[in-house]
Length: 134
Image 1 (tube, rainbow, N blue to C red):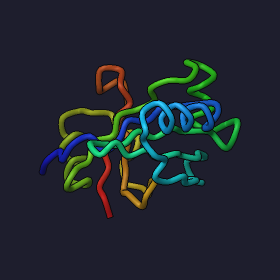
Image 2: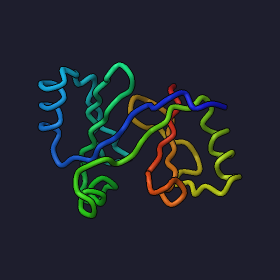
Image 3: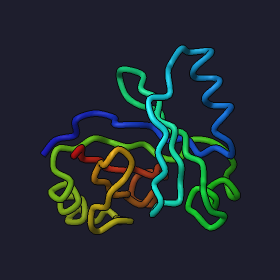
């Protein structure tokens, strides 16, 4: 059971145009993919830096988790995602150690990854996502 690296850093935004302009024009990083994840009520623009990804998250509904985040905190860092080799084993391991899981069972996220979130109360105030590639 291993952490394979940072899969992505996610940033909540009101609009996808400004981040696209900044990352494409200032840093020469191309938008690799735009994807709507309907069950999470979000559109994600995915920028691959070659050493990890940055995802910009725009809500598709006023009651989505991203909308709620933006209302309470404004645009900014939403979560850090770690790539893991065995998501179920990690969830069991963390639960045994008293980590509060938002997702008891994996679900499907962007790019077909299997994902699960850990509550920030258990992770020093940082929302953490665990991802396993398909």
